[in-house]
Length: 78
Image (tube, rainbow, N blue to C red; front, side, top):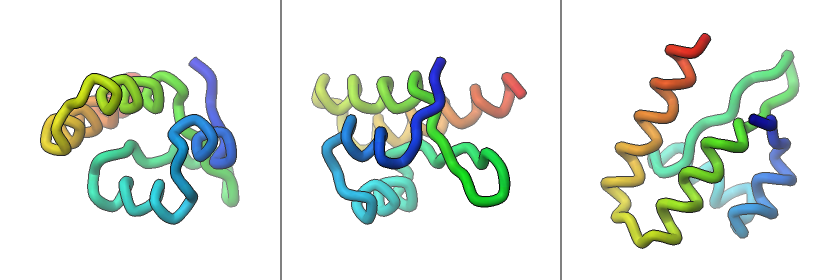
């Protein structure tokens, strides 16, 4: 797993920063991991899972469940 910076995530998902944070608020994209006081990163495997789900044509509801599962797995691994 690699930790991605905001700029990398924006490039990978093809959405602007504002849209990405709107997706996080909506529950259709995983929130970042705080890495220090002023730094946030996203686990690459979580970003890839959401991108794969979108490519597969999963519904917004299924993507929200996926995001919940990804965040829960993140917390269990800690």
